[in-house]
Image 1 (tube, rainbow, N blue to C red):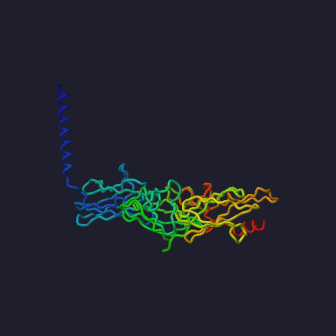
Image 2 (image 1 turned 90 degrees about the horizontal axis):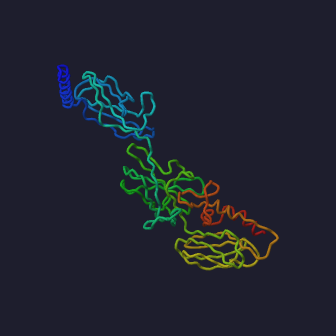
Image 3 (image 1 turned 45 degrees about the vertical axis):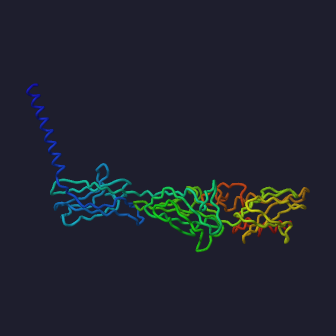
Length: 408
């Protein structure tokens, strides 16, 4: 090896040992910052919850310090303080509102404090981070069901007034008990009618007692809306915007409360032939009667078995509109159906049967909102008639269509 080579090699070895000792000295140097306290998660979105992150620390030696908030790349985002005379016996307490030096809100992500010590001629990045998180959680009610029963394969869970409903939630944060609001979505604008909470923070669901203002919930369409809160204080509901709108509801939070419902045949029934009805009496027996629209006496009556289709002979005679009335456990439902005589009549009467179904406020798909042609959603046909007040008669039938039918 030449003399020049030996000199270069010796210099490299010396530099390596120097770097090693410098590194050892830095590692063993006393910590400049201690007793650090930061809010690990906060959401500076102006909702009043964890909008500002308090921070505090102590210096090991008295010094003049400048404190910045830096991002993961080490770039300054916000200067919190300049030339503070810090003492070891007094903690430095500051706060960050999540804004940058230009007044804009900092992007979601992890940030740290950088403390510059003028007398010591060094700066320290505090290991503990502050995470800005303004993204609301998005809980989803996976299903609603009756206690001890499996969830329905499709559509909403159907319960009697006052019957409990169990719901399961996906993406619950489990930091606080999940809150639930019960919205009634039929019979006018959606409105909140009840509230309840999950039994514990660890629970992934809850149970509605079926009550509204201390009484059994009236027959109607309901939606259960969960609200959860994350570590940063963000609250999220499903749906995110309230009151709920069609097409914005995730999961199956729908609950249909009813005592009795009847599904009539859509097309006219030939006189004397069987008219088929589906009767949902919630597992109870019922009594039924048939009378002509405008008539005062039943032309047929009888009793029906729970959970069995009702097939009755259509009245003979001239064509007309009839009402099937079903009574069970104090509840009454009336639905119209049409009978076509074999003989041709001089007057053709067309009734809006599809409109009766299309405007009826019943939840078909389990999202908790009525499926109606008037609100742009699809309608499953056939289906039971809820009618005004849950009585089965289509809106306006008793006041407008029935008198005309009786006259004709």
